[in-house]
Image (cartoon, rainbow, N blue to C red; front, top):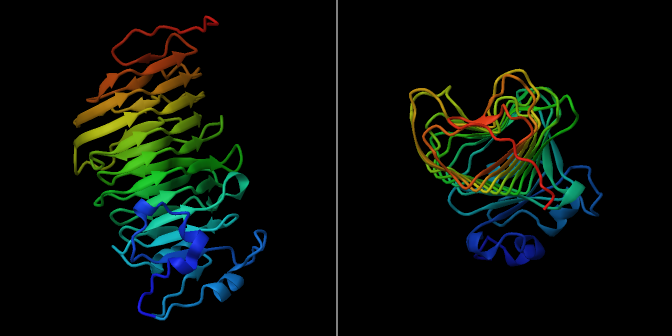
Length: 329
């Protein structure tokens, strides 16, 4: 057999990936729990149907990291994580193969995912063009350092249609996503946290590294003590942040922490910023006296956003707060 991509043999699996992003020479890898037969199939059964390729490449794995390690950079390989696969992460993984797509299958409570079992657990995207899609990321410890780190020094990464959530009211991420990769996209995700003190930020931008980052069509709910979308100034190697777009996001903030923290924060000293904050819808139930500033736009332009407040002390930096009430129309 001359060709080893075997897309035709993978039939229904290959159809999960849209044609426009599935390269003709790519290989498809499968991930399933070692002891999970709830979908009627386990890895041993999969290996019978999808044996080792003639070139020695194994196609079926029990961890996402192992499947990613089997991929080849630049070939357009795809890792499909089967429904009901819940990976318990107690380490720092690195999904670091250029152009690989890690895509979860299933929806609702069958969606594949990763549960962070230690505070040092995290996933680093350490290559160009890595895509992560339709996975459930669950914090099951108090103050997990971060969910996904879109590492600086890379570009073209994408996180879409994922869910970031918590296992219980006392669990949280310090940062759900830290974005450092340039020319990247975070879109169509859900970020949900509890109403207790803990989660620091939903999306943290690493200094001036993530130029031309697009954050759009995401949904955020809960208590984000230090901001839903905020610049992290711990990296001062690059203080010029260019071309950031924050567009069409829906944010419901219930922050009650006494620590001052804006919902959106781009105002940081010594940084030159260019971009736009537009078409976002923000509802804030923040009752903390310290949080009088809800949006700090920094060098970004601000247009066509709507902020509904439950407290007249909450405001956009540079403007007088106006409480918005529902007229019933």
